[in-house]
Image: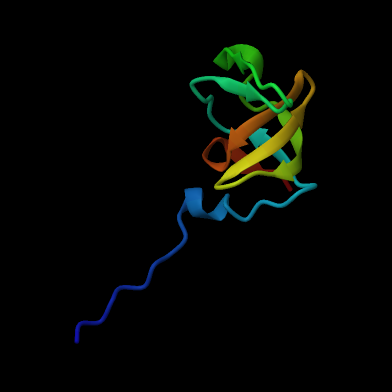
Length: 85
C-alpha cells in the first residue's frame, strides 16, 4: 500500500472554521450579493466594499453564512470571508 501524503490546511481551509458571532471581513468580492431576507434580492458586487467588517449572525447550508454589514445582512460564501482576530 502506498503512503498517502499528509494534507495541510491552506488559507482557504482555515477560513472554514467560522462560527456564529465571529467578526469577519470581506476578503474578495463575490459576483453579486444576495440579501438575507425572506424574499432575497440580488445586489451588485460593490454593495459591500472589500475589507468591510461584519458579524456572522447565522449559518446556512453548505459554506454559506448570513453576515451583518453596515449596509445590511447578506448571504456570503466562506470563500469570500476572512476571520478577524
